[in-house]
Image (tube, rainbow, N blue to C red; front, top):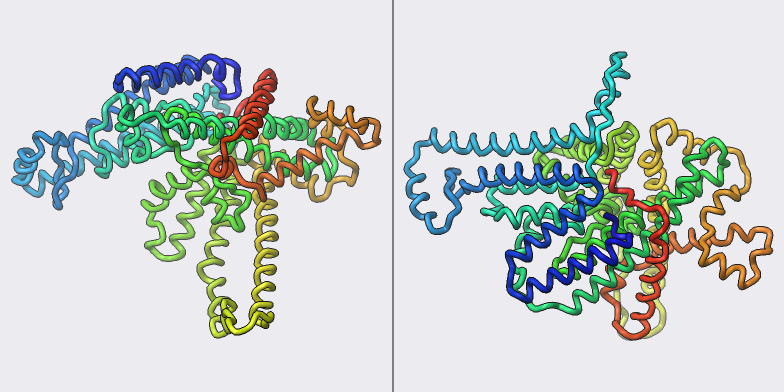
Length: 556
């Protein structure tokens, strides 16, 4: 079920809200959780019932692993494990304190074996559904075999809920999670706003909120914020991302017919489509969560406004970056084993990130491009940039305040110059980063490396010709075209290009300069004017639901 669908907006979510707050009002907390689980299963099973069976089976198996691990929680310095039941905690601690060292190490070994088994099985399921055909095709290419591909159905969101469950199992093994009820665990995994495309939530973010469910009064301000955030995210998706998407789809279907200008525009269009598509989904997920009284973590923070690739990955898909840092980068040694090992670990994480996004060599190229730039940037920030600071350490400070006169001084003039200089550097850095990221996205979007290379080659050395009229027609939005006709601009020679350039300029402004949806909601003042704007925006979005649309990250 899509957020941008009639059934979600007019049937599913109204039922969800009424049932949720009705049960809370009746002080039926346990029933409320079961109700949300049932609604989440309906939401997920709407796509395909077999998807639901896979997810339910995954939840059941992982909960058993959680129970096996949480029955013994480390309580002593020796690493002895004891049951987590508070009523019997003292007795069991005393009993385990008398164990021999060999028995203690045996318990620790069995716990670790259970954790490893759970992680391997989760990764095995993910491998089978997402990577098995890629593995077979690679073997066929390398060894000349002819193994038939299985064309296995890829369950939506399997990468997200698999990683989420792996993090839960590992945290249980580490003693960070106490006994969790089956209802809380099932809701943690299946909670429908973030089930399909993230964010990848952590137990420490969600389980405490489930525990407080029904113990707090309804927060109408939070519900209003959630509704506004949902509408803004919906507008990002259906009004901006899908518009750019029509141009992108046309371009990649006609790569051989494009000139240099077309190719450059399509590369930029996809960078904007992906941003507004994924960030729009995350805004909608957070908005739905807020309307249900649950805070879902921020997953995007204006990533195209970053000034380098390190800053970019602190803003783009924040929860995925957090997962790889905690469960891959740090276990590999992080930065504790020297710079060379640190850079290797960073590059390995980005290669895994590329593979996580998709089963194809083009995704690995994308990961390698980000990994290489990330390593180079970290090397610059760590080893080269500080030297420039030391060279200027003896220069007079630009923060000097002259109190005895209001006449401009050399220091103040230099301060203005410095600010202008920093602004120019920031602007140039932001543009260069956007260009690099957009080029890397070509491998993310293309069907294969050959198509990506052809797109980039056309953008660099293709024939010089005007932008194709067919590409411009992809941006002929009926609502805006009517305005152009009212203004009698449709008779101009280049009238069909007006909307394309206007929408492109608006997209670049919002992504590179403007405030994001979360920042706008923080500053929002709920007055009649803003209410009317949101109502019109919501109506406009609903009127576009008849168009074919899906979320890009559903496939990742």
